[in-house]
Each structure stands twice: as C-alpha cells, then as structure tokens.
Length: 68
Image (cartoon, rainbow, N blue to C red):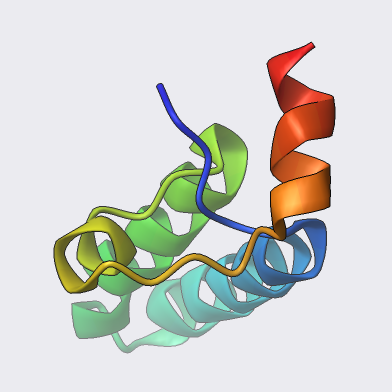
C-alpha cells in the first residue's frame, strides 16, 4: 500500500486518536469512530480521504526512502 502521510501527520493522528478514544470512553461515543479512523490511518500511513483529494503530506524524498 502506498504511503501518503508524513511522520508528523501520522504522529498527530495517533495522538488525536488516543485523545478521542479517551473522550469517547468518558461519555462521547460519537467520537469513537473518528478516533479509530485516526489510529488506523496513523498505523497504515495511508489516508483514504487524502488519496481521494490527491493530497500527500509525505515529501518526495521521504517517499523514495520508504520505497527502498
């Protein structure tokens, strides 16, 4: 699978996902789905919304590094 998320983007998504899950457990269950999406995209390094909109936060230099 192609990566389209930069390391900083993946880290931010993971942190937001964990915070969202904590909020969902505390009583806001609607945030759970978005939080799980953030955590999964952080783990995979691929965002389907970014792919649909043709957005890539991963630089060309970093993309070449991950191909090797």
